[in-house]
Image (cartoon, rainbow, N blue to C red; front, side):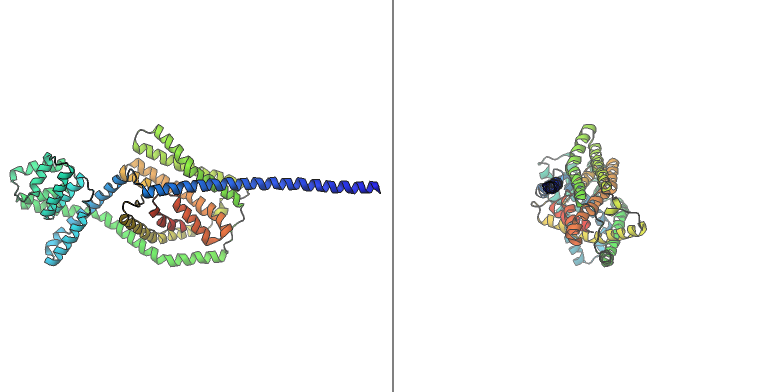
Amino acid sequence: MKESACNELEKVQGHMSCWKDGWHHRQGRLNLLSLRWLVASVTCTAVILFAIAHLAKQSFTPSPFSSEVNRVQKTTGLNIIAKLVALIEPMLPNLAEKDYARVMSELDKLLRSFMEDADEKTLYKLCILYGYLGMRLRASECFKGLLQRLGGKENRETRLLGVLVSGKRVSPQSVNQIERSIEALQLGWFEKLAKAWLYEKAFMFARANELRQEIHQSALRGLIPLFGILVVLLVVGILGVILTPFITYLLCRDIKRKGGQVRAIDPLLLFEAFAVYLAVAGVAAPVLAQQIALKTSKTFEAMFATALILNQTLTALTLLWLVFLLRSNQSSLSSIGWHANNVGSELAFGLGAYICIMPWAWLLSLLSFLLSRSLSGVLQEPIHPVAQAVVLRSSPMLILAVFVAGVLIAPTVEETFFRGVLYSVLRQRIGILPSAALSALLFAILHPQSLLGIPPLFIIGLW
């Protein structure tokens, strides 16, 4: 009896020992899982907070390049307006007196908007454009502003331009001298306008009319590409508005048919992959790429191109980490949306969806631009750093780097991690629509632009 009782007691003690070992094992495993979730969560939170702080700084602090970018924008805008003026100028005398006065008044308001914080070359161009249109008083006003900008110190070119601004006739003997002064200003297309104005002041009407016809043809040739771009954008915008209900219907039908089901993947693995991506893309890659570019490049173009390519290449390496994690879970990239089934229909649907978002993204971008103008001095206009660099130092090297990094690498990586990884994690927890909205919001926040750039980026990320 005692022996039997001892055996039973030993069995109970053995079961208790096994249960304790199992409990400790499960507790250790739970502690490890909790630690992994904690590390991934802290990493994501830190990078997102850093991005928000950087976003706020860019929104309320003028960029060191913002004045230069604004100057380039003003120069481009003034050149386009000048060509439009040259294109319609032959039709202005045919207008009724009241209509002519109204057109000239609106044109004056438009040109005066360029006078605010204008640099010397812009004032030169405005003065010439006003003179070309026969608005001598406005030309004189621009000339006075130019002299103030120069601190009252006239140079040879300024003195000769003052001869044009004055109401006095220009002697034919001084035409060649003034022509050389105009060319010395290096005003590009505006030189022709100034010479036409000069010939009229010298009563050389035949040469003036001949040059005006040449200016008209030149303006037409220069504006044809712009008109073509505007027509394409208009067609795409109209097509996007028309396709929006149809694409939305297809999306809703697809969601209803699939029921929002996703392949069961360990959300911790995906969350860890996304945390690594954020840490690399948001901190490690930019810092490392910048340091390497500074040490290996001698020019601004080479430095920026090297930093851009290195940044995106290092970020793209996180895809290898993602593939490793998926394979460790006996999964593949197809489990997060990458597959080769129905490639043609998928590309057609993607193109249709992209066309759909274009008009709404443009509309929000326009509203953001107008809001930034109304809040000038408070919120900065959203300008991407890559766009800043290309605007300031456009070169084949930079354009190629932007194409490779911005068109080939970045969209592939971002689509994989935001729409594939993050969206899959959130969809398993909070559903389809909330996860789509949250992933799109994070996509907008993590891009280095102003707060006013969030709405159009959110629309792009949502689709």
